Structures are given as C-alpha cells and as structure tokens.
Length: 109
Image (cartoon, rainbow, N blue to C red; front, side, top):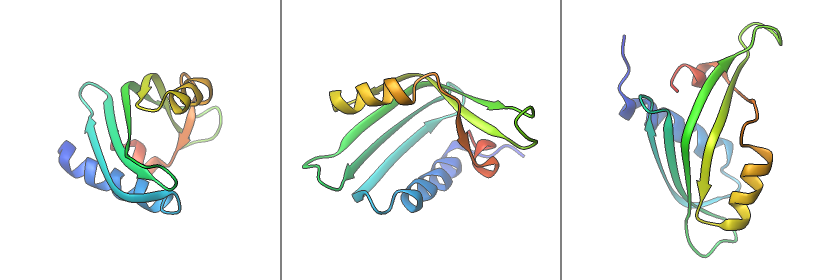
C-alpha cells in the first residue's frame, strides 16, 4: 500500500512535536517530499524571536544489520538553515552522519 506524503508529513510532524515539546514554542510547519528525498521545517523555538527555517535538500535512509537487525539511520547530505550559527552546527554534527531513527518512522521516509 502506497502511503501519500500528506499522511507521512502528519505522522512525522506529530513525532517531532512530541520529541521536542520542551523546546518548541509555537507552531511547527513540516513538509516532506519522499520522491526527491527532501524535507523542510519551520518552527519557533524557546528563546528565539522568530521561526527558524531548516531545509534538508537531500537525505537517504540506511538500514545497517551489522549494528543489529532493524537498525535504521537517516543520512543528510545537504542541509541549510535560516540561522547561520545553527546551520554551522548542523553541518558539523549532522551532515553526512548516520543518525539513528525509529524503524516505525524510517518506513515513512
């Protein structure tokens, strides 16, 4: 069964809101394009005056059974952010790294 991106967006957006509820201070706008493997996020964080915009221009989902069965990772190869300091951190600690994600969400990406 093919799941439309609109349903995937809703599911992943709910996960992000729950996972980061303590630092989100307002609405979250999440968009997902599974065909082109890209996503965007606009969110107001605690302590910020305005929303931060994050663009993942290219990602891939990796399954690595050598770690243990059912291990899924997201690897982001192109990322940008409206805040320069945050973009620099993301490029240093997130870009081209295998970041573990729950299997139940990996299938949606």
